[in-house]
Length: 611
Image 1 (cartoon, helix red, strand yellow):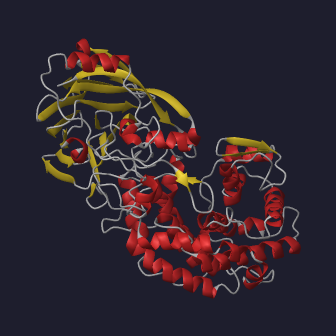
Image 2 (cartoon, rainbow, N blue to C red; image 1 turned 90 degrees about the vertical axis):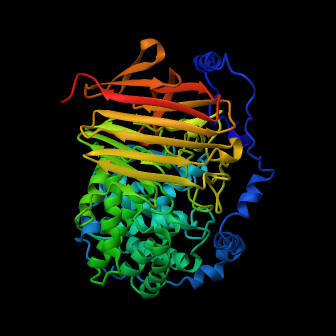
Image 3 (tube, helix red, strand yellow; image 1 turned 45 degrees about the horizontal axis):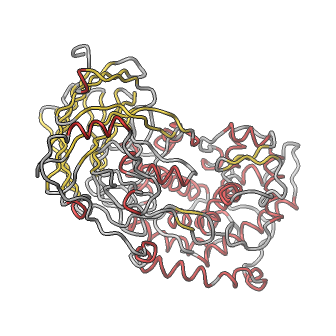
């Protein structure tokens, strides 16, 4: 149990790894200090008081107000609105140009199979609370993301209307789980952006005034509650997304002006709090940044459709964030697998960059957010070199400090294990240092990970980080097309008295990528330097365990050489689109820590001469 807090997050070394460590340490003299990192006696309680005061108060307020929210007088106080017209034209961009979605999931729904969070229920009745459904499945139906999947599958309008009617009829009153701020915001956004399909004439050319009144009334009550409840226990990007949903409602619904006023006030407060000066988001998750970019584009387009002036600097923020997302992309359109970033549909990334509407800046580093991009010729390396975010913003954080990914002409070579879209067990494993292409000391995470916990309003969310690197340095130099990075972090200082220093070099022609990893200090007994391979890479160990030959999916060959440890081949796992677990392999350099400065050098070089 890594750090005494997580489940078998960092797996024990296999037989080959144990043998290599034993051989490497056969001549060792003396004993070095082991892990001295303090254990948290009451981790949940201690970390709760480490969270921002505003978040603690917001969560407490939500809990206290639950009886009020469930009461009849409160429901009546939300007001009513007639079936009038929406205030935007449905031929505008956010309605006529939907984002790419999962057409296969939409086809399955047409066949009566409702698949959410890895669970399939056929013909669920009642729709929103069928017998045996898990909380994660119910969250999937309550969010209404499936409207986009039906649209991608070219489902008849009547299907979307009937499912929406059923859900609205079953959920006339407040529920603590389905009206939780983040779920309500997602549902509100999806319903509003699909109103061009739901609320216009049907396939036969007639309109249903009864459904339109039901839809309009429900949208208004949900938006009115969101305006009163926010921040509703939300913090960071989740709060910003809820604020954007509130602004969409204010722009589109009759009598929505007060919703818009409340939304603009919160938007003006949260946006500068959460976006750093280099354009990145404070939670440091590439996938989260893409999702926020999409929400901001939708907001801009609805402002335009409503013929209202844009909030100050909204377009500049979109262009800046689009440049950041572009920087964190590989050539195949996939985002770097850092900090809860999963394999996603590359069409979504392409659509977001295209619809950003401005000229994107070619960035090579985000010094405040903590990422570096090394790109020479056709070789690209993306590096995580930032400190994990503060408490309250760390539910997406991984213990992958100084990890990197490498691709050649869009062909992935070195990766991290990614993030599962719904399985909390897999997510916790993939947060560990061992699931990243970086160095690990004594099988201990560079950041102490807290276990998943129950979220306010139901469901499970990932725990944050208890102990983490607080000093992470990054220095970049470029000369004649060559790139050097000098990086370090102190995540192992408290436990072992060690500093991890990593130096990286990429040649101007992109055919030589060299690294040097050092551990400086008096503690620790063994290390494992991991290089997770993409499932499309074939590998074999050569030169008596000092090198490996790598064949990429597109056919190019690369050779890896190591000095200062023994190279071993081990199993790994990569999470593909939709949560599919794909078996793959990893190269692991194993060794013992024998002095106050342990050093491992490695080279990844293209085979077959210069091109």
